[in-house]
Length: 398
Image (cartoon, rainbow, N blue to C red):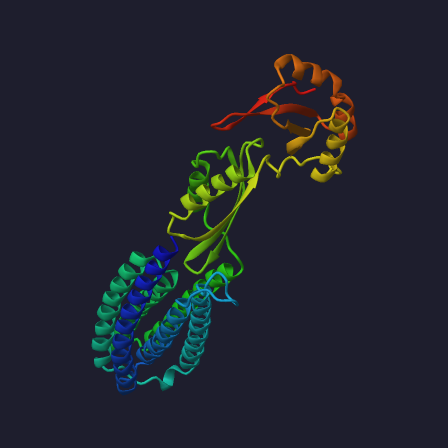
């Protein structure tokens, strides 16, 4: 299971590197065109869009760095791996977009306050805006397809960043057309709209990343899928206290499963490991911690101050010694309904049913039960054969 996660992580890193490098190449070309032609054509909106593309370029490098760091294996300082580096990168990306957007709004407001100083826009600005619109929309579709294929939240955020570029380029084109038609106010208004779109996208990315860094749980649908996987495990009677927390594009799962309280510890552990294996088949789960409960401890708890196993054994051994007997095993069950004790005597080939019935009458099980504060005390004998050991009850719970 761990090797599958590592393989999936390697594929995601390869896709992230390839798609991000494609974005870097496109943004370098478009940014150069937008800023240079924007200044030459006197289009503030186009220059603002060029600054947006510069922010895209910076965010692409953030993605590349985070993608490399998140792929590092777990170590002593990061036991669960480094997947949250991607979330941190998304937070920085959001903060960067907010800063860029606010700067655009400020510059547009200054320009609107001085409309008389706005020179006419050249038609070359419209041609560049149209080229950027087509290029960014194509880049968005490519990046989103790749991001969804590997289910990377960071890459999806970066893809939608490219879509916001396409939207802002459309606004720039409309503002440029209006400015060419003689309404010069439309160019700074277009620049302001672009700034608002960039800041809004940054807020969305930043807020979502902050929530994930604050151990946000998986959505209800995904949590329900995980609960069904746990509940479908043979031996699991119920699932409670299911908790999840985001870890990059994955999640950590903690859950309590209810099993038959009378089974052995090893069987309970086996059921828990089986449940964990099932949960790990969900590719969204990075790791799972399964706690075994004999009862739903969210509702009921064993009474306080029950005797320890050592105390139970000491009292029972003392009672059995009066009859010259010894126990070879104890099963002690601590339940909300009370304490149950199963005592197993050593095998005795000479002991028959009548002998054991008489023995049960001579042993003061009622007194032992009272001293232990137990609900039930059961006495049984181990029967030895050449093939196996069997256990039969000689007395009923009292």
